[in-house]
Image 1 (tube, helix red, strand yellow):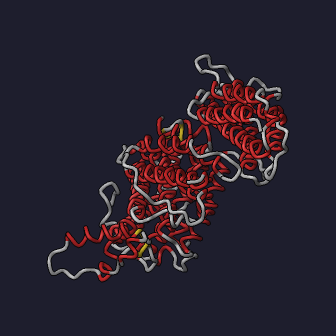
Image 2 (image 1 turned 90 degrees about the vertical axis):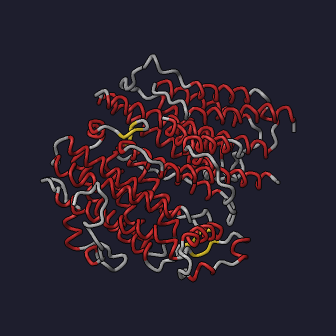
Length: 467
Length: 111
């Protein structure tokens, strides 16, 4: 193999890959420019792949790149009904252009002399470059849709959204190709149905794992997701109130504060759990995927360029009456999850933590005890082997106390939010709370919501929740 | 240390940075108006952490010295820089998504 050819090809391909990563920090909202630059990049990748003498082995990168080039050309060649507007202050996507130039440069450096292994490596890197670039294009178009919606340019926004859907498919194909799996075709869904489906799937997955053998990591993943889901519900219901679909008093005096306190308690529970969770026990992959889908769907509706979207923006994206109805249903499901989480935190479920952390915390705990106080028997349960081998050990009950208190507060605030949601019923919106309070929904643990004990409900709540 | 071991070592470092960024993003006191964004960042960094851990060999121990930095944005930036050193090849299925996810988080944390 010619080593000059190897460096001459691999080095610019490596730099092209870095340039495509860099593009994600420099979002451009000129859809025309972004799409044409992406098309040029994919064409350059196709050309370089074709020039290499050795065919792909294993994952067929060259076929995938060629297919992506065809799909991109089909989008670029569309007779657009002038969906985009040039913004003179927005620079062209120079990182993508640079990446395309680097791949062209590599194509002139005798790529036909690369060995089979080097050709495979170069193709894998190019496919990765194309995938990252396709993600950049999708994110750029998403921003353009948002910009146009915020300007009231609904027709243009619909045109760019159609483009975004096409590019989203290209991104999915590229993602499947880099992961070496077949692409499953699916039609892009509107934001509202996507959110609804994501909430439903999350509800099922989270209930299932909590009812099974939950670990600290599982509970941590659920707490994190629920904190965001509860904040999202609050934002959606707030948008419905701003649009006049919900009583301002009912939201501002009771429901809003209860939801924010519930979100805060989910977050606090996560904080206590994360002191003991390690990477040795990760949450189930299915749960992680479901959380990813829900996060993506929620972001599409309630976030706007790194900030909470205004009520007007949310109303321009989705039907706020439907969204608020969905939020209220999720409050019901969230309450059940909160009660299950409390059962896990307070019950006999084993929650483990690293021996070193448990040891340190026990020492801190014991140092605070008065002389002569009886210590937790597990204080002495740690062995030297546990510590030296860095094992995970059971978290003793004395160290679980903050977790248990947090889970108790979470359950209480969730019930207040559920009750407030039921009380804030508006004609046309489905009631989340009423049905759940009446029947109970937790089939998974065999106990209904109403059968669970709610110690001190309404007496020990934080100051932000009205009594 | 061979390439595979070095790649795993780098990924473990990325995982620790993401996990710390997630913990800090979720626990930092923020104004009510910014809470949604903070929760989103905490979850995003945690999901990226899970994604990185899934790339590691079975049984690989991620645990090590916790990063000292306390700004989630800087931790994410550090994770992104470290991720650049992980070689992209077809043996590491799933790396591309992690790269895109971490880049998105860096951009959003800086916004």
